[in-house]
Amino acid sequence: MKKAAAISSVLLAVLLAPVVVAQSSASYRMDEHVFNAGGTPTSGSSVNSTSYELSLVSIGEGLAGPLDLSSASYSTSLGFPSAYPAPGEVDRLTFTDEQTLAWIAEHAAGRYNLYRNTIASLPGLVYGDCEQQAIASNTTSDTDTPASGSAFFYLVTVENRLHEEGIKGYDGAGTTRMGGFCP
Image (tube, rainbow, N blue to C red; front, side, top):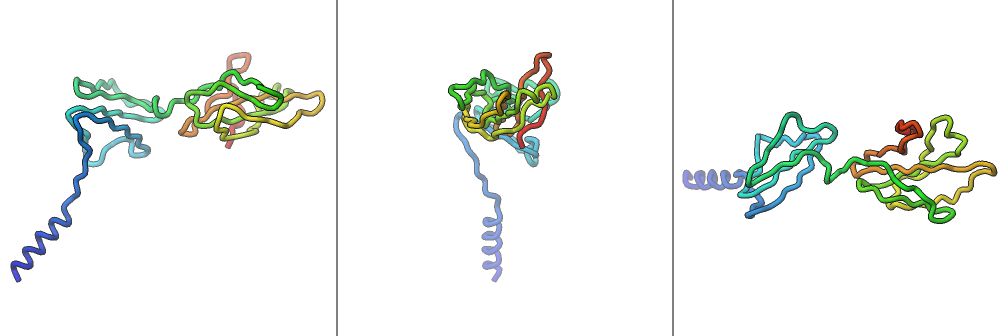
């Protein structure tokens, strides 16, 4: 009976032992993007190898303090600039024919939004209503015709992959154009 209990105890200990899984090689790269956890590893665990790269990232504000974490065998980088660049201003919006609009593709593009309104609405500083949203490419069409004696104006914004929308550009005084945004 004692022998059976001892074997059961050993079997139970083996079954309850933590499973250790790790990636290892002479050189490897890990890219990790963590939301909410703030990049703080549980229980102070750390990544290590004979050669590794560690990237500490944050959205919005950068990491605090002077930070120089590098040596001959590792380096660090801060922020999401390569994975999630900030959306910029869409440039060179033109008509390629009577109904097709095109613009230069923006480096942060996840999708684009098209704003349209009548020229008469401009004195009210309303820079267009959301006409089309989540446009996948850098072209779109508008088949609507303005009323006689009127004209439309168009603005395009870009959203990055975090759904942060860029600006509608600047007015003649150099002020950022405001107004409603696409939902």
